[in-house]
Image (cartoon, rainbow, N blue to C red; front, side, top):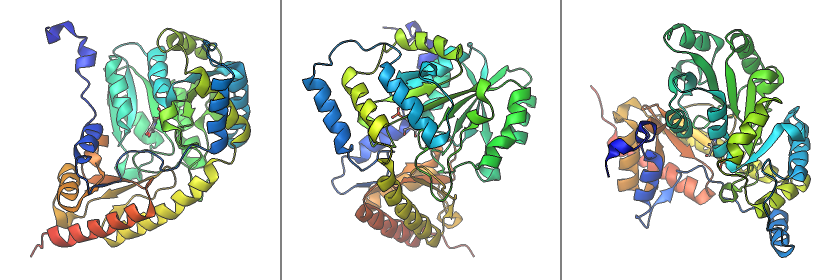
Length: 390
Ligand code: PLP
């Protein structure tokens, strides 16, 4: 078979370097992994029970492709109560995780050749999805503005690319990989420039329930006609493998996305949707014990990494610490990650996987023992490998 036969958009996507690295280091029996964004909590018991009941009760038929009305009604209420979302059940499509949501929204909104602004560093899914759909991306470095996207940077991204039709922006708040969570003022500041330039925003709020000492706000409050939210239960209810997400969007737009969804995945499985109904109706407090545990771990990791000589980005949400490698190590991010894995048996991700080669990402969705061992090893590595300059 000739590779020429393959769609060039597909050929342009490289396999995830993160997944490959994670797979590679898994061969080491001693490895302690702080790699994937995977909650180390179990699915709450009442949600498991709902899934088992759905099987026993023979809920085995095709669900309505938008998702069960009961689930969409429950999700509308849940997210309204949590974050003030203003969407009715008929403005929600139930997806196979936020991942499907991102792909569907990109496919629905943009025409091949149009451009999307991607604040960098960024979760690699977006890069791949943009390429798969034949779109251009304008990466905007946020590292000089505390990893917050500013209105000036949005305007500059448009002005600097007169040859591109910039029509979209992907905003991840709270952010992966930086852990940064936007304040109300920071979000509001973006609204005029987005309105003036008619930029559609894909607002990935999958970590919305995991914020520390600050509230989660949604940009859709101030930009309702140009925002599409993706969210889901992977992080809030530790249901990564169950694959349940939502897209919330303005009427009209949401009908179009429903078509893309219907003729690709159809719908998440009936059993998981029943579990989702339970989560949305009775799982309002499920995230809180996890959030509290994460907050303690965040404090610990941020303190230890600072002590070890890393410049730590203030993590207001999610479960990541993103930290600049000390200059004394004179290492790029993959060299750091590979050395730490090979010689010290600790796995974390290179910032380069997200577009920032000066940093590394630690997922603190891990046990206290794992985090303690990792911090000790990182301090040891800094002591062993620092190059003394004269
Ligand atoms: N969006 C962000 C920012 C993520 O970090 C992740 C997973 O790590 C996802 C989306 C994927 O979410 P889901 O499991 O709902 O597909």
